[in-house]
Length: 288
Image (cartoon, rainbow, N blue to C red):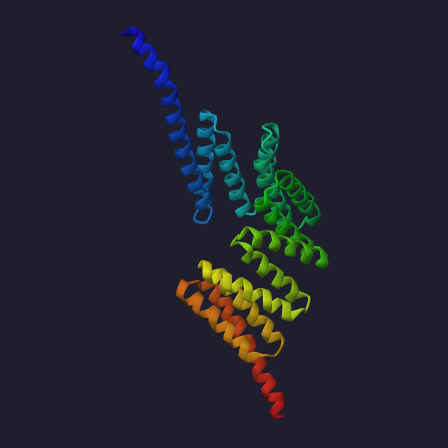
């Protein structure tokens, strides 16, 4: 009887430990995801829950969940423009990831730091971090990470006025994402459209704005789709094609009204008033 009990303990106890570990992991992941989602609702609540998850993850020795929560904690300070606090947390997380030799987690903190420095206007430092992220992603052959980092690099080069480099990087990101059938390629289409728009290459801007809008429509990303239409309206207004400008304004307006996006509606009405005023002035000049 005793031998049977001992045998049962040897067989069942490891299974119980594995089962409990899996439950703990699922629970912590749920909490960590909830903390991240709270960023869009209440930063204080997100910060409080992220801090709780960090302590729980440390107790359970679950490093990846702790790192998820540390990222969220940094983002709560970033969301309040408390950049020094965000940098401190992201830097600490980066050092921990490096100590644990976890390059996949390391790149997440590198990109977070790059994002903060970009927001601060320190584009050269942001560029350095984004380049480090791309290098690690390439070593890991992480095509998803590479495409994200390339897009971020492109945006930073655009801010620095290095337009040809920005275009080249966006195109490389697009090729990777199209090959992977990654739906988030709509971001690269739209960002490339913005570059062409700002540099006066309007035919290409229209092409990529429409590509982005079409894909966003199919994905149900209606707010982002509306931004594309708003950009198209501004572009056609610049081209003095007021009919098409109003057409895209109305498409954006419909989305903003249906989604009750009041702030975006206010911006859109101001944009529409400018177009209408310019149109009246143009017609007056023709009459005169």
